[in-house]
Image 1 (cartoon, helix red, strand yellow):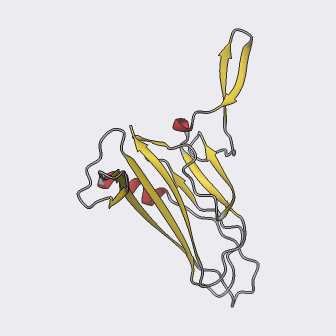
Image 2: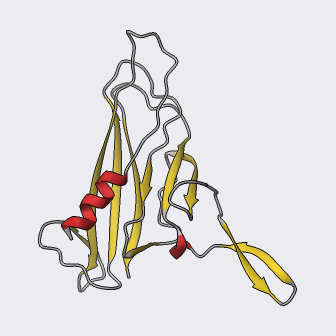
Image 3: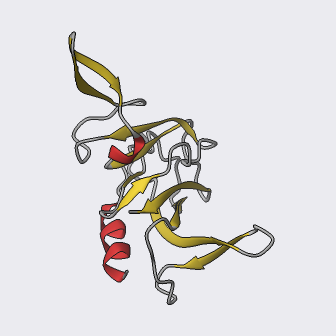
Length: 164
């Protein structure tokens, strides 16, 4: 389980650019938290932090939250947080938060190419046909920022995966 957490921590990345003068700079830090999502007898979600003895079994859900905080003195422009879907898990369709994003993009090839709805080619009797990829094939996701991250502000991005 610790390996799963480490792999994801090392896979979270960010791209932020700023056109501000050298004295005014954006300084964005990302913090990642993973929680196992289980339900109590009343079907309420109970979150257990990864690493707190939360053993993972097939079919269990993990909710990851990435918090981007700008401690700088200027806005972080073109904020693009990205995360890898950990090995042994599959992205849960529709689980990525959208409030802070203009759009969410997914990759099927480890982040080489991106699309809002990635396509795969499927052989049919009539030849190759492009069809939407099953979300279980996604390897990475990223959020394209809707607006700059202002100084002293934070924003959270969340998504879920299911253990295979």
